[in-house]
Length: 421
Image 1 (tube, helix red, strand yellow):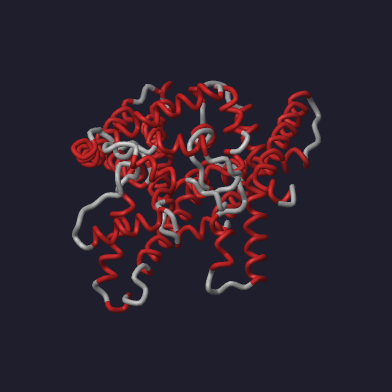
Image 2 (tube, helix red, strand yellow; image 1 turned 135 degrees about the vertical axis):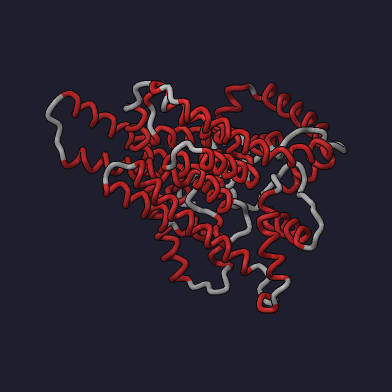
């Protein structure tokens, strides 16, 4: 559904030998990723009845790889066995993310490449080979989805920040090679887009997504009043070139903000965007009745498990976020956990304006699981150890503030149930 049709069309064209893109709004990586298994399937009789099965199997393997990489990251960054097991359990057992390995969106390949880059930064020394692998992984991440382009720069620079006091030249050299690899892999796409659309870019959907984000008034991305298709058609008809369309829509966005006011626009966005982002009703949940194996008991069992795990993630997230923030002493003493919080904040700020689908949360789902597990760990410790001094009393205050944030997140995620809608 939706973008799936466009990705499959692009992949089939590439598999047939015609190098095409979907246009300037989408990075070309996922179409090429799908083209390989579709090409193989087209040349094997055993896949005649199921031409996309091999592509789904490849994504399932990538999902398994995501689980293995995430387990390694959790073991490295979390201090207690209990929090590690909980983070890994939340990540692996959430039905929605498992289901996305069967859908034709770039979320799972994007997540795999990003986790690979994160694993390299956290686990591997700054050697030439690993620096090149880091740059390549981040380039593939951006070619799948553009959303982590700024985060890619942070990941390549993060070892330098952490080793600032050590004056380690190895980390600086590592960053240089990572940047070179990153830019060399993206350069052909940027060059092609310059000659096709008049702009050096991997893709550019920010203006269009901002306009849709400002105008989509629904609290759920599963609704009969979907406006993306209509807005896309109007966007494409607005002018003959991508740059002209962007300029027209930048003016429309400025006019929208000037008519409504900056503060009112911001309030309006924040009062609905996060309902969509944290909504428990994902594509998987909404599509369950349409599956050929549909059974009402299985449906409600999966829905219950999915909702329970999502509620556990949201509740621990508020506490873990508060605990992490209050333990920060300086920018030069940040840990990997702080990096995960930065990535979460980046996504939350980004989607204050940009159009939201519930699947977008998969890009930072691993960070949610780790911070949530950290929150649960701290909550258990505080419950088991009554305070005996001022410092411990203060830590209880942090937990209470975190729980208030957690209840707010739970309301965002489950408001449809709470208001009996």
